[in-house]
Image (cartoon, rainbow, N blue to C red; front, side, top):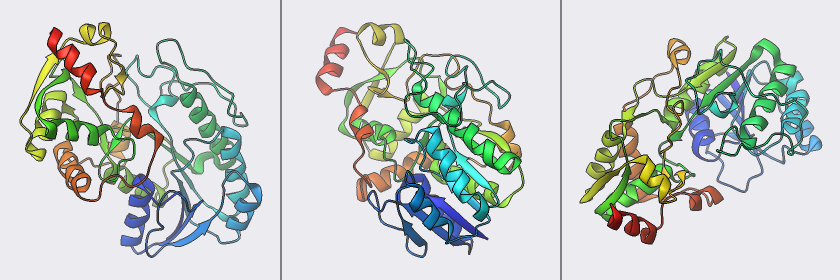
Length: 337
């Protein structure tokens, strides 16, 4: 099996490259060579996927049985369309890492793969789409929906779309789980979003990587919601953070209405907290039937802490600074409840 990984140097792309090599596959990676080191054993090609000449140079290195695209999150659909078009003669199959944000109903409604997608043309530039007043839909979701349309236009029924909500695990660059681990380690009373029994569905990066590789080697097509089928309660999540870090913290469960009144930003200041009804109501049964296996999230928390306490974050990324409430703001809210 020969595959091309678009990206391949950090987090999901790195786990995919390592997993493919572990299966004895021949792996080519394509990236700019700026964000991380090439995985030992791959055949690296460096270039800018926004430049047609670089993509044409890459295509000569093929053919491949499949592409797994992990690096299109900041690209407009027209760039994804260009890459798919240029690489089509050298590639049999395209596995595209997308997002649950492509759905019209996210995060307000429960979702299946039959739920309608946002409308964005496959040749859209980065101005297409908008973010709603309440934070949904998002311009990001429109752009990713357009990217899915772009890949479908070129690859048809040999395209697969993986639609995760939140990916956690060793190597995380966004900083959601590392922030909670650091907060648990610091100890003391800390804000926790009620209800404690709210079930959340993040998925381990290694499980997403394994599923992506299975789809690269398979014959299925279309979309797959990649979310943890059992999930974990927020209480269980924080208890695991405290247990792994040895922190003496005490979560103070605060009603969402109070948090909102106090100006706490959902999704960022308290990572993974969002009050919309559908945010953690994503049906992943199609992916499970196709082979998605999700380890217990307590294992994800354990392994992320071991990585975080050792190697630390792999790359500097602007989203890291977005996550976590300032200690002064947290203390002020705690004093009022």
